[in-house]
Length: 213
Ligand code: AKG
Image 1 (cartoon, rainbow, N blue to C red):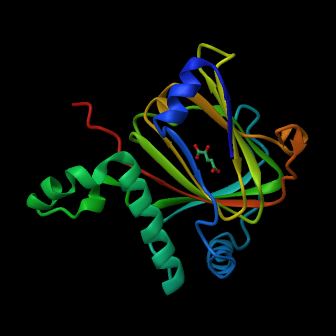
Image 2 (cartoon, rainbow, N blue to C red):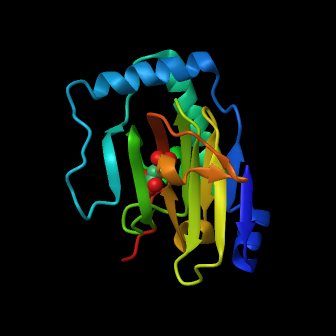
């Protein structure tokens, strides 16, 4: 699920700075997640207005509580995968000694992002004030292609095919030095094959930013 060009990209891939795990959720789990995510968006329209916005054709919410047991267990799995990728399990015992649970290394809500069929995400790097070393997302309803391009070396890039129901992880240099984007349908190609983009819902967990003071 990964193609790349450039030495930086090669290192990011072999150091697992980018990862895709297929079939992270089952079809039943996907259905449940979509049902609950959509219920939070009732009557919310897709945004196209911000001419300078990073995302076009979307609606979004932050969610800290899930009603269904199935969804609660998927979100736990997502959070565990995020922590593990960040190396968080190594520091968890220390966090517990301060009476805070290990998942305090994660932001307390997940980000739910619903992209319309013609929606897309322009290249950006997540703000270091709001997000730490690791970003992990589940892709629902549609396959898509995520492209990472090094912020200075434009010939240093990574393409990630994100199949429907997969999990992706971006961390460390891949997260800090590469701009990531979700390609619009017209540019959605992987291995010269068109990857059709449909309405896509993603559920994204992030580690907390480091304190800078
Ligand atoms: C972001 O929230 O920074 C994204 O780029 C989201 C990517 C996704 O929808 O999986």
